Length: 345
Image 1 (cartoon, rainbow, N blue to C red):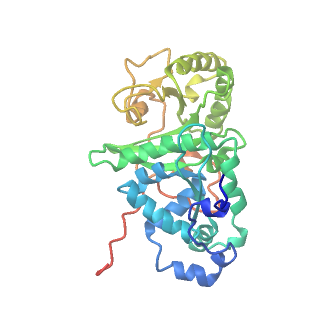
Image 2: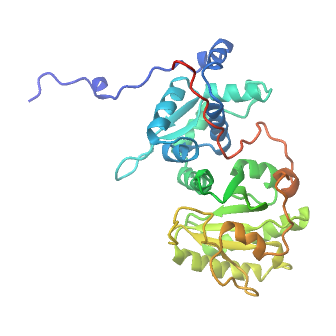
Image 3: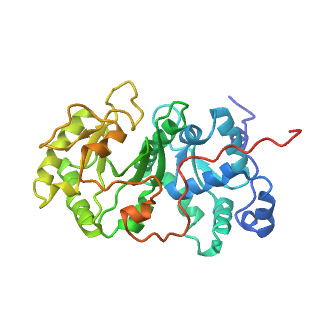
């Protein structure tokens, strides 16, 4: 029998000291951060504001050379309350650390954009509250789709680059009265650009419910005069076959099916580059001109001749349509180059 039990508080892991919420937003504290935050730190804070949550693995593959470097810097940003973190419960193994924006990060971003932090659409309780959201897994996996494209853009032999990534919230600001995609992206390769809306299927909706979204995208194309392809990512090849049958039926009900170019792919499709959405894994939905093989992301633009050609200099707000206003400027998907070390450090 244990006669001198260890106090429960002694069993807890060490938690780094952090300033309270109010001190972390004072002008003095924010001024002190100015000499410590790099361009990459500020970019990461803006990415977390835009996309709500990123895991350690996702942050590493889009901004750091190694997991060790990422963990070291993220710990420091956590101490400064630029970011906050949590680990979801899973039944087997250990979940990765999930990072969200914290109060100091939101204040820094507001100051950068000339906004009053008090009017910024940010609440720490809501930011960290995503830990209990029923949509957490869907948000994380949707973000993983785009972070994989960023990781592909960062490789030495990369042939293309992700130049735009809008979150579901930003898409809702622009097109929410008609459609609400899970994301919007633009890929540049060989002096051409290809843009798309993403519907990330988590396997929880009936196939006909997925097909029921197509009339909304047709209405958006007719309203704006711009045809934007719709990419649908599903978990399995078997699920993809069912979804495609539902999509064919839905396209058959449209007055002009060419307004909604659709392509599908599945997470378990093996092509040697399983986790790269830019690889040859996309299957266009076109009964009149079926693709002879699965296409690369950059090849989809050539498959649909009705698409408006995009220049590399055009911005999403002018080519997609909608109200470009938002409380914070959207970040570029690619992280800025790391700040060189100071002499003597």
